[in-house]
Structure formats: structure tokens, C-alpha cells
Image (cartoon, rainbow, N blue to C red; front, side):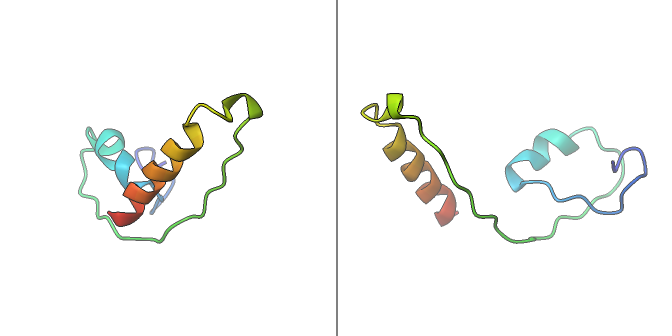
Length: 65
């Protein structure tokens, strides 16, 4: 949207900024906009795989950044 001149501001997750904006030729500014809550559904087939714990650990690491 920015590249086509159809938006003045676009919320982008911080982790994606380097990838999405690497070839953007104009000056852009970053501003913290907040956090979004996220929910996960984990299928029963993953019940004993450790996936839930891995997701919780990853969320915990992101929350500390």
C-alpha cells in the first residue's frame, strides 16, 4: 500500500520490517503501536509432542524483548 501511494501509514510487525522495507526507496519512520493478544488452538495429535511448551517458551522470549 505504501509503495503504491494508497496509504500514509501501515502497521507492520517489527520482526517483518527489515524484510518488507529492504527495497523501499523513500524515508520511513517506525513508531511503536502496541501489542496484540494471540490465541492458539493445538490439535490433540500434538498433545504429547512438547509443542505447547515450545510455543509458550517462544511467547515468553518475545515478551521479554
